[in-house]
Image (cartoon, rainbow, N blue to C red; front, side, top):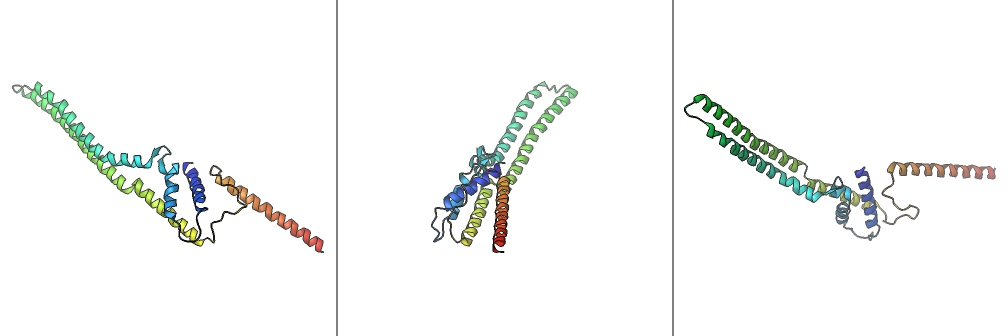
Length: 203
């Protein structure tokens, strides 16, 4: 739903900017593409709420935070395990062994938090590298600019036809297509009726 509205806003904003350009010469279609994408809430915000720039900054911080939290968990575990060594009685091997076993178990668990932090760090680095929001945004803008450039070079002019109604970005595209198909069919039937009337009058 958000993407559908976002695409409609893209069309509206692009038409609004392109119609005022001089057709002679090469327009700055890349600047227009950047502008319409930056002002579009469906493409400049994550789920229409958080700005893409801020979201990208958070994603870049996460790998380092995972390492920090892993080390913090390790030191916290060691800090909680060390006081248990006070219960060791070197004269009683059974108690000493039990205390050491509990201490080593807690130390191993504490070390596990660092390992988990490192694993999540690697995963987040791979995700950030593969699905970088900035890279996706740049690629999308470039593809959109290439499409506009192709359309511009194939067009004879950038005049807005007078018979086209004002673009409504909130209109359902299926309704718009259905209405267009009905209008074409009505126009075709009227043309047939006129032709039949003209043929009858001629005969």
